[in-house]
Length: 417
Image (cartoon, rainbow, N blue to C red; front, side, top):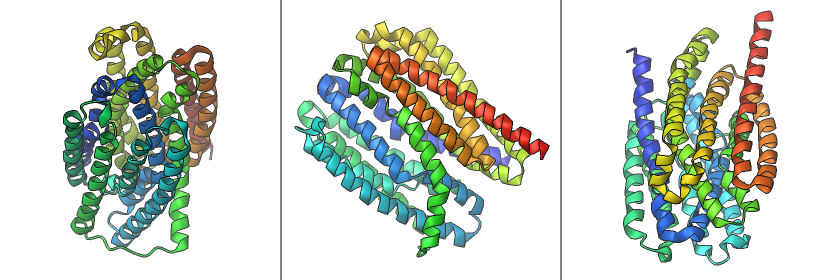
C-alpha cells in the first residue's frame, strides 16, 4: 500500500470513529428517546436538533472545505498555515456570536418553544462549541488521531449520560445540557492540542485577509447551505404541512436510517478530500485518477447498502418499532436517495472543486435547491411524507443530471482550448 493510500485509510478510520460517536450514536439513541419522551416531545427534540444543524452550517461558512483545502495545500508553509488558522478561528467565533443572538430570539418568539424556553436556550452551547471545533484544521494537516480520540471519548460519555440520566419527559432539558457540555469540551481541548502540538502562532489578520478567506469559503457555504436545506430540512418542511405527530414520527424514523448511512460515508469523503485536492494540484490526470480510485469504494458501499435495505427493510423497521413495518416499501424507495447523494458528492465536491469550479457547483446547487424545496413543499402539502420522499429523490436525480452535463461541457471546452 502506498504511503498516500495509508494516510487516507488512517484518516478515514479516525473520521469514521469520530463520526460514529458524533452522529451515528446519537441517531442510534433515537429509539430510546422516542420511548422515553413520547411522540410530542420527541417531535420537539427532532425539530430543534434539525434547526441547530442549520446554525452549524452558518457558523462553519464552508470553512470545513475551503479551510482544510487551504491547509492541505500550504501545510508545509508555517506562516500561511498559522495565518489561515488565526483568520478562520476568528471568523467562526464572530459568526457564532451573531448566530447565538439570533437563536435566542428564535427560541423566545417561536411558538413551538412556548412551554420549553429553557430546552431551546440550552442548545446554545452546541453552537458555541461547534464554532471552536477544529476538525477542518486536523483534516487539512492529515493528523486526525488526537481530534478523533478526544471527540470520541467525550461524545461516548455524553450519549451514555443521556441513556442513564434521562428517565422520563421531565428530564427533557438534560439532553441539550449534556450535548452542549460535550461540544464545548471537545472544542476547548482540541484547540489546546492544536496550538501546543503544532506550535501554532496566532497572527492578527488584516481586513483584506478576512475578505480573502470569506471569499474562498463563499462558494462552499452556498453549496453546503443549499444541500443542507434539502438534507436536513425534510422534517422541518414536513412539519409545516403534516399535523399528525404519528406521521411525522414515522417519517423521522425513515429519515434517520438514511442519515445513519450518510454519516458512515461522510468520514470517508472527508478523509479523501484533502488527498484529491492535493492530487489535482499536481495535474488533471492525477486528480481524476484519485477521485475515481477513492470514489469507487464509496459508490460500491452505497450500492451494497441499497440492496441490503431492499432485502431487509421489513426486518429493520420491525426492530425499530413494529408499527413502522407498513412503511417498508417507502424505505426501499427512500434508500435510492443515499446512492445519489454519494454520486453527487463525488462529482461535485471532489471533482468540480478539484477543477477549481466551485462556483459552477454552487450555481447548480442553487438551482437544485430551489426546485427541490418547491417540490418538497408541494409534495408535503398534497401527499404528506410520500410527497417529501419522492421530491427529494427526484431532486437528487436532477442534480446528478445537471452535474454530469456541466462536467462534460467543462471537459469538452478544456480539450477544445
